[in-house]
Amino acid sequence: MSVDTYWNFCLAHPQYGYYITRDPLGEKGDFTTAPEISQLFGEMIGIWAAGYWQKIGSPGKLHLVECGPGRGTLMADLLRIAKIIPDFLKASRIHLVETSPSLRDKQRTALQDHHITWHNDISTLPDDAPLCIVGNEFLDALPIQQYLCQNGKWYERQIGMDAEGALCFGLGTTPFQTMDIRGDGVLETSPVRERFINDVVHRLKTQSGAALMIDYGHEVPGFGDTFQAVKNHQYCNVLNDCGECDLTSHVDFGRLKTIATDLGAHVVIETQGHFLKRMGIEHRAAQLTKKSDTIAGGLHRLTDDNEMGRLFKVMEIRI
Ligand code: SAH
Image (cartoon, rainbow, N blue to C red):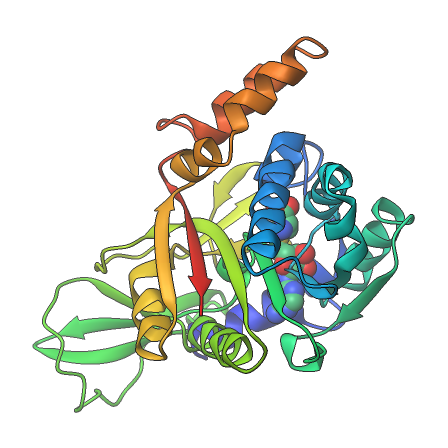
């Protein structure tokens, strides 16, 4: 089977899928994300969203959407800081795009003081007001396909079984005649991520709005195998323990930017460290450090070049 078919089975199988059956986040889970590290992260996303709302003339209604909200921590932190701009909070209709029933339960608890509408995908979002869409580590959960070049021809990298019945990598039998790409190693594509960005831009064009997607990845396209599995905060073999590990890959922000730009959107990509500092994370941390020492540690992890500050990118899409 193709890598994306395998990926979908492992993460989204209705009975055994990784995200369907558990809450994978936090120290006791398999991996920790920026909103789980510090409240500063969701607060800065809130500053961005409120700033966008003000820039477009403070409309009386705005659909505030989070894709892949995990435990609902980012949205809770965002809404708490939004209290300083009561009209923004009043205008915001909150929508969560989430496929996991167990994580929807966590989100319901984290956001119990707010009226929330859940969606399986963005197609059911209302179209009667501007959109403000955010997503942290959402794109990397969407599947990829891989290709390998052999003797000048590209083949799909697939997953099958060896003589002992264990999963193994192999190549599709028919080369792609039309792939005129020169390179060495593994080429990764993600039609699902591309379709998502395409759909977002079409939505923004019809009802106006902006999107902010944060993930680890690269702006310059490259070759290389970034398909990885994580369990208990450790990397593991992507073919072992199907449905028990998180599967991800680096996001090709350069490609997604090209797609959005070709459709007429304005796209800015910057490092997470740069974005958070631009939103004033250091001032907010200084304000909070008086109350808690963990704030300084969180600021460092989120913004330092050797931590999450450089590898993670923030992509803003506007019309
Ligand atoms: N944003 C959160 C969680 C990241 S994990 C954080 O930063 O902590 C990825 C999230 O995306 C989970 O909530 C997972 O259930 C959700 N998800 C994965 N695939 C999805 C899909 N196809 N549609 C909607 N949500 C999805």
